[in-house]
Amino acid sequence: MDTLLDTLRNCPSWLLWIIFLAENTAILLAVLVWGHRLRNAVREVNASGIGQQATQAEPGAQSSASFTGTVAPSMPSVQHPPHPFAYNSRQWHIAAVTTVLNTVITYTGYWLWTQQAIRITTAFSISILLHAAFLFFAMDLLMYIFHYVIHKTPLYKLLHTLHHEATDPEPIDLFILHPLETLSFGALWLLLLLLFPLNIYGIIIYLIINVIFGMMGHLGMEPLPAKVHQWPVLKYLGTSTFHHTHHRHEQCNFGFYTSIWDRVFRTFNSQS
Ligand SMILES: [Zn+2]
Ligand SMILES: [Zn+2]
Image (tube, rainbow, N blue to C red):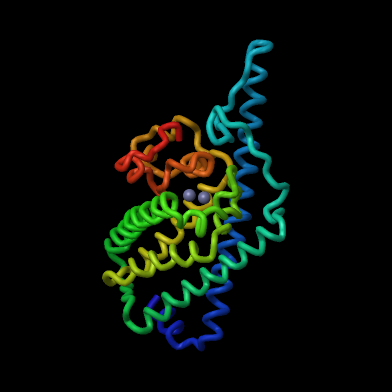
């Protein structure tokens, strides 16, 4: 890792811009492809579950699958695009702008690191898990506050209506954000990195988790069986249904990774 960081430090700027743009483009495409595959896999399991139960059920009895495949039992199934890239040109345009802005945030983080404002450690120790957990919970709180504020103030119209055009989100909606909203989330992230030296592996683990939660929140269906939602720790995680419910009922579920802050500040929708 030290060699890789030294190489990055000595890279020409133009090459770094290309590398960071490629990285953020790969994240966009990965979310679209893996989101699409996961939805298809859930739908297949769901269909086979319904088929099996239908053959066992009494004639005329209503069957139910072990996977909901929908947001909540009372919500209808959402039509999904036929392939991972079946989005219109406006969606692609906005997602491209978000990807470029994410590249600007990545480069700003790199620049702050070269100026030693952001300090990185590379030790293979317990700090990896501690720092990943710190970033997870700290960003969850900061994003809850920011998200709550933009919903409850005139900032909503300026920054957030674009993201809320989708009442039944699809994977690309993770990137359907107003440019200022993208930059604001990026600023929160960079401010956190300024606090104290953070382990690079912990940062990478957090960033992977961040993308997974973002994709799951905009999946448009719930891949987890209902009973899993009640497991001790999972009960407090931000599931697909949790964020999907926010898109349908904007006055609840402002958290991203957990429902902790929504429970604390009484904005949690218990149906999610
Ligand atoms: Zn969303
Ligand atoms: Zn919102």
